[in-house]
Image 1 (cartoon, rainbow, N blue to C red):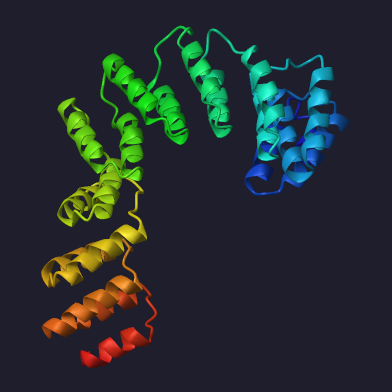
Image 2 (image 1 turned 45 degrees about the horizontal axis):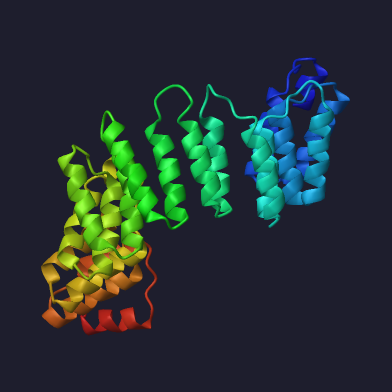
Length: 341
C-alpha cells in the first residue's frame, strides 16, 4: 500500500479502510492508528467509516478517553457528518467499558439522526438497547422503524425477536411473531426458529412442538437449525425417539450446509443406544457420524463396550478410530484387549 501511495495511485480512503478492517479482524488494532497517521501525512481524507474503525480500535487498545478524542476530531472535521453510525459506534465503546449511562445518552442523540428512508440504523440501535437490557428503547425504535417506507424484512423481524428473547420477554416476542406471520408473503423458517429456540432454552418443549407443527401447516420448510433446536429440546426432555428422528433429518441436510450437531447431543444419542442395548442402531449412528468426522473417543468406547457385551467382532471399529486419529486411553486399550481384536 505504501508503494501504491508513493506512485499516487491512492487518492481515496477505501484502501486504507480495508487495511484497518484487516488489522481489526486479525487482532492488530494497534496498527489502525498508524494507518490513520499515514492518511494524514498523505492528505487522504477520512470518511465516516475511517473514523468509526479508528474509534473502535482506540477503544479496544487505549480505552474510552482515546475513543472520545477520536470522536472530538470527527466533530471538528467539516468534511464528514456525524450520523447515527458514528454515535452508535461511540455508544458501543461505552457499553463495552460498562459506562451505560453515557451509552444511553449517546444512543438518544443517535435516534435524532435516523433516516426516514432507511431502516438500517433503527436495528443497529435496537441491538445496542437490548445489550443494555433497555426494553423501552428497543420497543421505541421498533415502533419508529414502522414509519419508514417499504416492507419490514424477515431480517428485521429476526433482529427484534432475538432482542425480545434476550430481554426475557417471550410474551412480546410472541406478539411480534404473530404480527410477522400475518404480514409475511412466504414463511421464512429462520424467523420461527428464533422463537423455537427460546421455547427450548426455557424448557417449554410443548410450546416448541406446537410451534413446529404450526410452521409446517403454514408451509414452513425446516432447516438444519430447526432440527438442531428440536433435537436439543427432546434430548433435554428425555424423548430420545423423537430426538433421534430429528437428528437424522438434520444429518440429511449436511451435504448442503456446514452445520454440525454439538458433541453433547451426539453423546446423549450414543448413551441412549448403550443404555437400551441397541447395538444395531448404535452401529448405524456411529458409522454415520464417522463419515462426517464427528465420532469421538467416548462414542467409540461406548460402541466397543456394546460389542463386548454382545460378543461381536470389532476390528472395523479400530479401523474407523485409526482413520479419525483417535488416541486410545487405558479403558479403550482394555476393551480392545478383551475383544481380542
